[in-house]
Amino acid sequence: MKKEYDFSKGVRGPVLKVPPGKTRVTIRLDADVLDWFRQQVDDAGGGNYQTLINDALRSFVHQKQEPLESTLRRVIRDELRRAG
Image 1 (tube, rainbow, N blue to C red):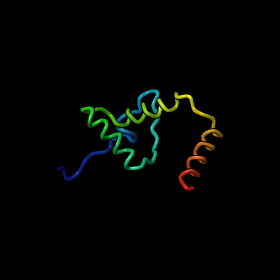
Image 2 (cartoon, rainbow, N blue to C red):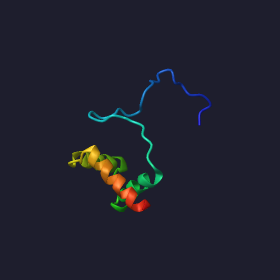
Image 3 (cartoon, rainbow, N blue to C red):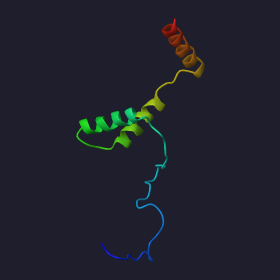
Image 4 (cartoon, rainbow, N blue to C red):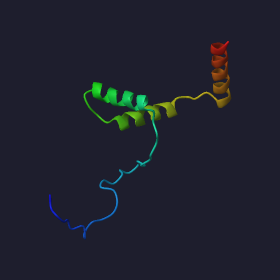
């Protein structure tokens, strides 16, 4: 290791640029969810868990979603059934 380093030609910013069509975001995921995605990639013999999460989110978005009111009614019914 050198005693001193010359950073006079250094440039601020990310080391790698974000590819076109991608946006860098910070999100908080539960540890068990992140572990599951990492395990899937590991079981497959490699890959990128972030790509897997992106694919899962895209799949969810493209599914036909029930209206919010229907979702709320279903969830409330399920919770009442469990509580009763």
